[in-house]
Length: 470
Image (cartoon, rainbow, N blue to C red; front, side):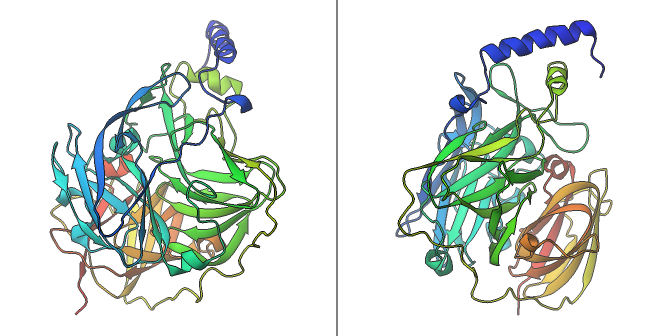
């Protein structure tokens, strides 16, 4: 699109007015505090209630927008459970649409995974009992309603799910939720002039917005103590990948991926976070200086002006989160642990290889999702080699399994990608070593899918039957 001189001057005037009375908080004094989702824990076998309902939320100062949410707020509470627990969840659908929910990364049998087979009509409930039998990790729950996943997640049906175990409890790392251990749920949206999110399905690919949100706030800050701070990062965007770095160039210390701790911390200057991917990082705040996490380059003035006349995919601001240290330095501060896991991550020998291609059009290996078709049949307790190719870069998730990345476009994966995972960014070709740890059945199959939610809604999903171990 080309801008005429009249359009440029009109838009410049709009921009100046917007600068005089800012709708979007971006100056340091106007940054909102980071919203911390309430913590919901299972105690003494009591059920956890998750009510899916309409709510209101303030994405910009002085506005309240209609949204969807869980338990009365945009996004849902953070759920924390322990390895060895049997957790009863009670989902209640108080919306006017059918909804199905799932917990991404949870290692449970197919009937407990949610999805199309566990659809909740309006006013209906679903109450699974989930056996938690996996290592400490950061997961997330989201709507995965067939053909409606993208808009329902965008509307607010998502939240963080934490698993703790004896290892996570004993490590000398921050673990006080909302004090030195923070959930950081990153999304991109497009807001109208009244601060209400707008969603329109793109003609191809996935939705990208121009406004960056963290836990539902734009460019928020959080006050932290001097010392180590733990951030649990989740990319809950429909399709946008983020490259994160610190504003002053200091290192990000990666301690965990999708399925739990890395063997040892990995220090990086830039960190990729693909849709559906989770990573935990430690940030050293002992020097007392304020610092921000950012993600690339912000829109130029011309890009912003262009955005008044057509939807923009360039972020207005790339500020993710500002960390503001407060108080005095503790008398004793722990150093970064040398090891996080007592043993190296095991590997196995694949018994077969599979190839999957995600083209520019929806579908996997040229086939659209068919709920009556099983695309992969495997055996619980075995390993396979999966080679994934994508014509357009996108994120990919596999239910009910854990995998290790063996190579990316023929090269070794980065050190921060060498732990157990369930979600991977594909830009070219990726080879995975997949472990089938959970069984599924024909009426309750696992799914593997593009984590570009619009592509999944259009059919980039396959179904997997994992026969129980004898």
